[in-house]
Image (cartoon, rainbow, N blue to C red; front, side, top):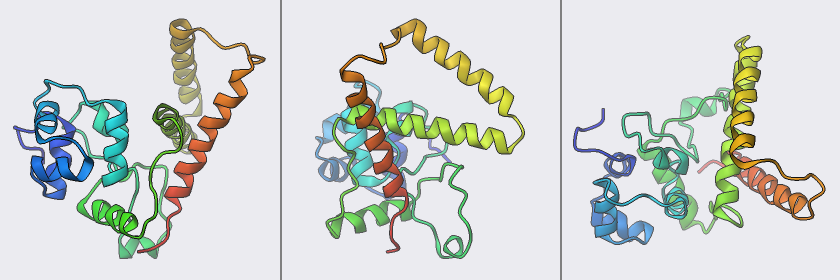
Length: 197
């Protein structure tokens, strides 16, 4: 359960892994005062810092950036327990971030295995969002709500095109951009298919 003093997801994350602001700052390369300002809502958590924290802890950058400490913390990199290793894991459902998730990522880091996003952090955030969207659509289909998911997706796309317009598919830079985002999706998938530790 969230403590009333936890106003930002970062504070929830720190409690889960049991680190002080100073210890956490040292882990992720930020000052103690920066951590304190983010947690007290006087400084926004940048996308770059959210992704760096995800890399060091395994906690979802999207959840950290949500500003919703009352919601379940989400693992970007999931460490299944012994029982789950014997069963089929439902990858459609976001997995809750736990101390085991943190310990798993730290083990990967000690082995020299990278869990960093590829190229531009913004591409990675977009790729993670696309993957979550596809998983949600798949889940809706399994629940017999495919039509509802299609309508919601259509509304989302209309909002995006109204806000940002749409690129000419023959624009020279578009295939390269698409490739970068898809590379990031592949990276996320490869991280999800991690070895036992």
